[in-house]
Length: 260
Image (cartoon, rainbow, N blue to C red; front, side):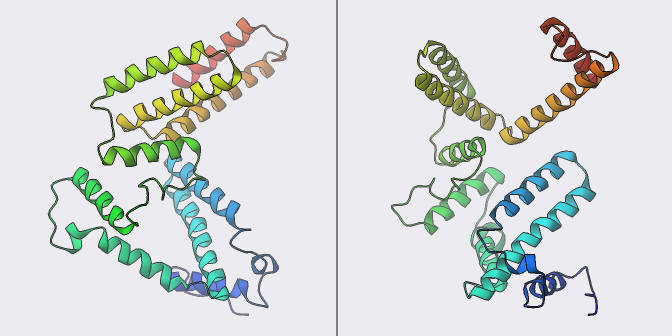
C-alpha cells in the first residue's frame, strides 16, 4: 500500500482516518464509538491546556494535532452511521461564526470587545427557546471550578453581578465565618462549597482563570515537594521519620531555591 502524500493538507488527515476505519484498516480504530472515545477526547483537551501552560509552541502544535484527530474521528464515525458528515460540522460552525459576528459580516457597529461579548450573549439567547435558561448550554461535565466560573460569567453578562469587588470580598469574609461556625460534616461541606463559589467570583472579577491558577499552584507544589524529596535522599534521611519542623525547613529551602 502506498503511503499518504501531501501531509500538510487537511484532506489527507480525513483520508487517513477513513482508511483506519475501513474493513481492512486498524482493528483498534474500527471498534471505536463516540462513547468509547469520550475519555480520549477529554485527555487530549487537557494535554492541549498543559501545552498552553508550558508556553512551548512545538508541543502545542503537536497536541492540537491530537485534538484535531479526535474531531475528525468522531466525524468519520458519524458519517458511517448516517448521523452527520464532516462537511456538516464545518458548515454549522461557519454559519454560527457568521451569525454571531454581525459587526464583521454585517452592518452592526461595536465600540470594543466588551460590547462584542454582550451582543454575543444576546444572539445566543435568540437561538434558544424562550423558556430555556441561559445556563442550560453550559456543559455539566465540566470540572466544577470551570463550570462555576462559566455560569457566573453568563449571569454577569445580563447584569446579575456585584457592583464592585468589595461586595464579593465582604461575601468571602461572611462565607469564611459561616464555614468556621459549621458544626456538622454536611454543614461544613455546604459552607465550603459556598466559600469556593465566592473565590471563583473573585477570580472572575480579577480576570483570573481559576483552572490555570490552580494548575500552576499544583505544578509549583509538585516541583517543590520533589526538591524536598531529593534533599532527603542527598542527606540520607527518610521523609516520614523527620519532624514537622525539619520538613518545613526543607520545604522553605526548596521554595527559596525555586524562587531564587
